[in-house]
Amino acid sequence: MKKQILIVDDSKTMLDMLNCTLDGAGYEVVQAENGQEGLSALAANNIDVIITDINMPVMDGIAFIREVRKNPANKALPILTLTTESSAEKKNEGREAGATGWIVKPFDPTKLLNVIRKVSPF
Image (cartoon, rainbow, N blue to C red; front, side, top):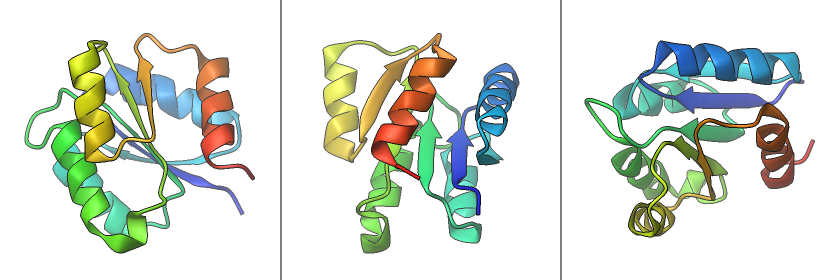
């Protein structure tokens, strides 16, 4: 059975790039355009890894991560941020919210897949 990865990003281009990378590596991809949609998608699917942007409308990535972590069932769920934000302050905020890892855009597909395999081995 394929692992399911939830990608949450308000950029259609980024969703398409991630979908292409992840689908090509054998993952099943679930997409959401903001944190609120991400929470709905998480509730409706058996997600193994989350990749989320930080700067999004409706509900940003930090608030989304905090909401995900409120559910004890999601305590060990790997959450990777994929964002243009690179400041130490934002990284700390993400870590405190419960992010597992931080990747700065633009991303290297091979490195992204290596990080996913590291946080959620087959």
